[in-house]
Amino acid sequence: MSSLTLPIVLQFLVAIIANVAALIALPLTMGFTKFGPTVFCASLFILNLFMMSRMIQSGVPLSGLIPLMTGVIPLTMIVVGIVHFGENGSPLRIGLLLGACALATAAAAVQQG
Image 1 (cartoon, rainbow, N blue to C red):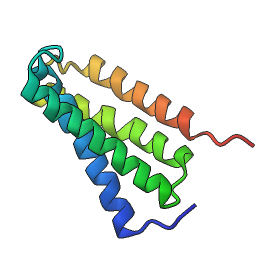
Image 2: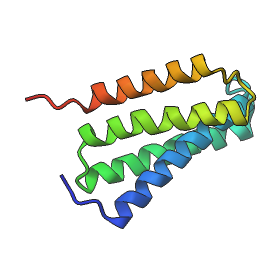
Image 3: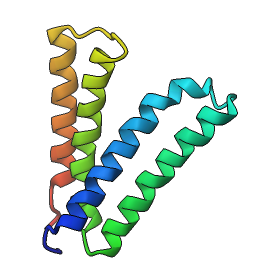
Image 4: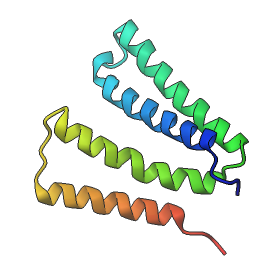
C-alpha cells in the first residue's frame, strides 16, 4: 500500500467533492433531459472517476479506496439531503442510515485471509 501523501489526499477530496456535487446536481438534469445540467453532472462524475483512477495508479489499493468512499459519500449525502433538500431527519431514520453506512463500510473493509 502506498503511503498517504498530500497529492493522494487531495485527489481523494476532489473525488468526494465531485461525486457529492454530481449527486446534488442530478435533480437539475430532469432525468437527463436538460442539456446543460446533464453535461455538468456527467462531467463531475467523470472527474470523480478520473481522480479515483489516478489514486489507484498511484498505488492506493482498490480494496482500501472503495470502503472509505462507501462510508464517506453516503454520510455526506445524508447531511446534504437533510440540510439542503429538507428531507426527513428523524432520529430513527438517521440512525438506520448511519448503521447501514457503518455495516457497508465494515463489510467492504474486511480483509480476506
